[in-house]
Image 1 (cartoon, rainbow, N blue to C red):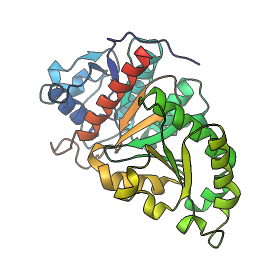
Image 2 (cartoon, rainbow, N blue to C red; image 1 turned 60 degrees about the vertical axis):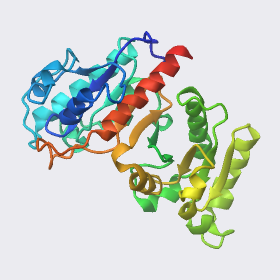
Image 3 (cartoon, helix red, strand yellow; image 1 turned 30 degrees about the vertical axis):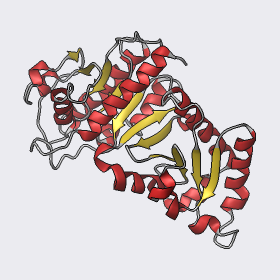
Image 4 (tube, rainbow, N blue to C red; image 1 turned 180 degrees about the vertical axis):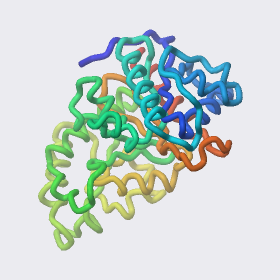
Length: 319
């Protein structure tokens, strides 16, 4: 289902995340540095009481949403409820066109599951809210050095080969290619697809997935006019001399994509969901309950997520 197009001046909606985590701190830090990084306008959904405990917190613009106590480092059912309510309201505001996109602060999935048993993650929540099949909501991790997409995400490594299929590779690569054009402004995006096995299978000596699944999917995508190459050996695909040859890399499993991204761009990595009718980004890190409230959390990834969401929303508004 499509979302209403927001006005070019509509602010981003920032969901509060779990108020016991570092979300409020990095939101406040991003607000304090908004002019330095030329960030687009944004509003935090709820949490004015929480934000009031932070530097400049009383100045941060908010919209009506859940409220509660600020107890950093002490997550409980109440903090999980605030996180879920803020996320729910933020998505609704974007879908109705009041806000131009959503940036989601970190939540504790295990805590939300206790109050909402069907909850899997914020990506899946956004897909469900937009009435999009979860398999069509594609997670991309983006940083200054690399954009990477894992085809399979939160599953055991032993289950990965069985989940791969030509259809999965083709469907998600098409979603990535379209998003690179629509949301990132690339007229002919170059997409590199990694192999599953060491040395991309080495002609079948170390697995046949490249021969039977990955290569046939690549041939079909190329026949459709998509600028895609591979399967590339994953141990060289992310080397400096290779990264300049593609705009996005598609990996076969979670760590194959996230290890290089976090090694290169840990403090500026953005989790962006492709394939949705709304813009959604998030800092690529968790709640960090252990350092919440200590004033040491870095806001770089939140700043990058806000900036990226603003750029994507602007392209959609003028597209």
